[in-house]
Length: 184
Image (cartoon, rainbow, N blue to C red; front, side, top):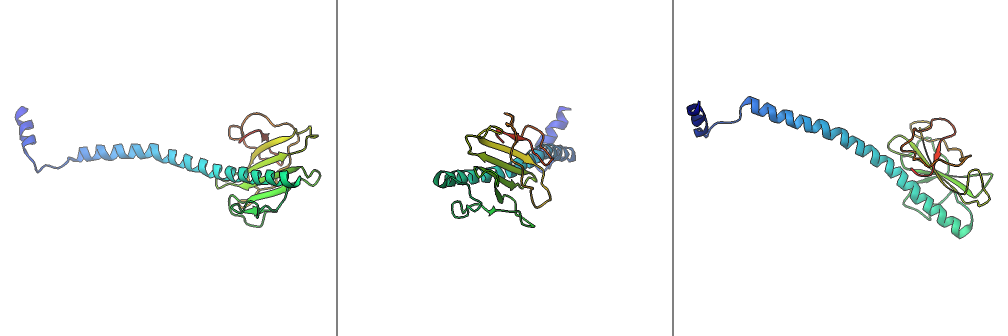
């Protein structure tokens, strides 16, 4: 036995055996099986966060306009030119375009909606009416499924106080009246 091991170690021209190569390929396959789903999950989360980030930037622009004019605007392309704005969904919209909707009954309420690359519609509603009681003055967030593959239905303004749970942790609403939350 020792003699055969000595002979094997003395040979310098030897390559890897088929078993050794198969073990290496198996290890690489296992690592890929672990890494690929993790990568795809991170990519989907990043696509959702891109739409949410655009909405937060749009809300900041709307709040700046509110501070200066005491009114929300449906055209903020000059105030925040880095965002793609729309006042109504065109027949086809690129992901992360922000739809601005000012409530016709109360100009102190604005709803911003974006179709994320993750396939969901993300919305933020800002209510700057101290007299509002249902819902109370504040910021509300919603996640819904798109009306079509290229557009989101403009969500309805929240009619009751939002819950403290996150839309990311709760099931998304698919009805006409989405569930509203106090954070994404």
